[in-house]
Length: 137
Image 1 (tube, rainbow, N blue to C red):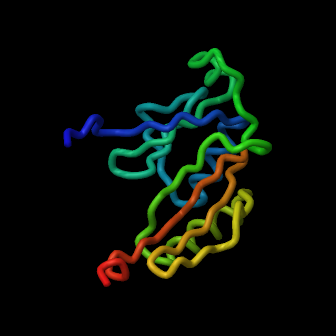
Image 2: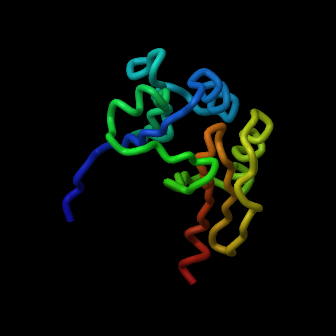
Image 3: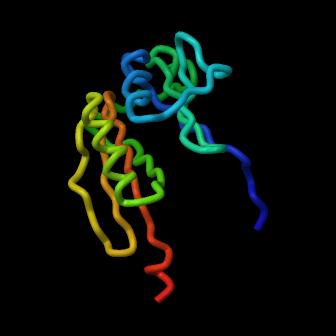
C-alpha cells in the first residue's frame, strides 16, 4: 500500500487566536513560527502532524460552508497518542488548568486508556495510551 501523504494539517477555526496559543502552550505544545502569524498558528502535534489554528474570519476564506459551532455540535474528534497513562492524565490536567474543559471522564479499556478535553472553541481532543503488549495475548 502506498503512503499518500507525508504530513497532515488539521485546520481548526478559533475565535481568539492568542487565547488558543496560550492554552496549547500551557499544555506543552509548541508552534512552528514559519507557518504562524496574526491570523494563524501552526500547532506542532507530532513530527509530521500539525493543527492550523485559524482565526475564524481567516478560516472562512477557505470554505463556502458555515463554520460549525463546536460548542454545540461535533465536527471532528482529534485523537492524539501519549506514551503512558500518566502522560494522558498530565496532558488533560494541564489543559483543564489552562482553561479547557473535560469532554469525558477517563476511560480504561485495559489495553487502551483515554481521556479527552474540549479546547476554548469546543474542539474535542482525545488523548490515548495504547499498551500494545496487552494486545499480544
